[in-house]
Length: 75
Image (tube, rainbow, N blue to C red):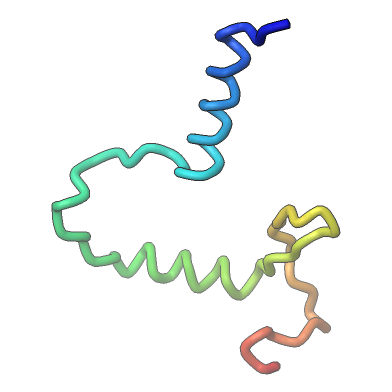
């Protein structure tokens, strides 16, 4: 029994999406713009209020940092 062409395409699509990642949007040769103060403040706020955790299956989640939890930079 042969595979249908759609099955092969689905496998190719899955491999491209998971191994190569999403397509780039924009000109990759253009220099990166500097971050603004607003973006920097938002990044600092997110890093201070959220922590990245990984479950047993390897999936990564962002959860709110508890007040009693030590800062990962302190460890």
